[in-house]
Amino acid sequence: MSNTAKIAGGGVAVGLILLIWLPWWVAFLIVVGVPAAAYLALDPSQRRRLRRVTRKELGR
Image (cartoon, rainbow, N blue to C red; front, side):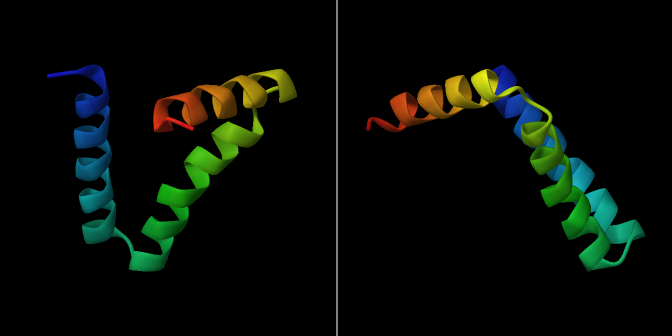
């Protein structure tokens, strides 16, 4: 199993647990807010590198 698959599986498990314990809108805010906060915490040069790598993987 690749690292990406492990991370995705863990994210799905955490999301399901959050949906059981918390109202759906709180779980949604956590699932969307954590990656957004992590992206905003990057330096501008790191954001550019991340966008460049993402575009390259998409075949643009």
